[in-house]
Length: 78
Image (cartoon, rainbow, N blue to C red; front, side, top):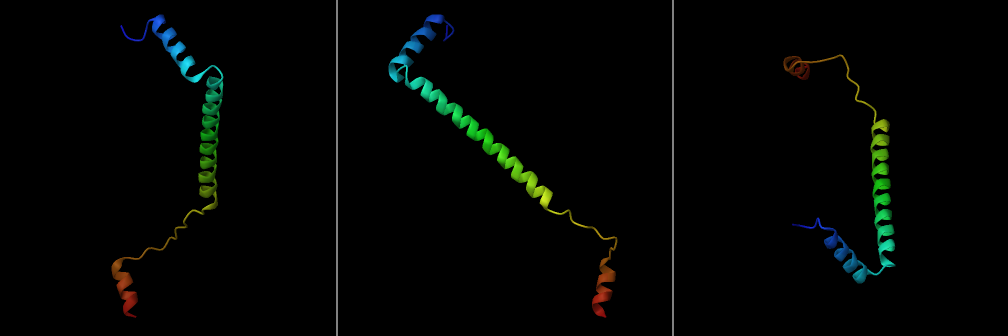
């Protein structure tokens, strides 16, 4: 049958309330929500740092000159 019956959920709710008390549950949920907000804020800051680093790093410049290995070895002989 599983945990689909309404009686199962009611018994579980009563047990949770007895164990934690009615005052601790809102505090616990507030702590969980604060943790989620801190996580999201950290992720946004991390993305901001990555985009700032990408914007501040200049792209490598490519010159139009290419040398082959034989040309390079000829220049080194001179």
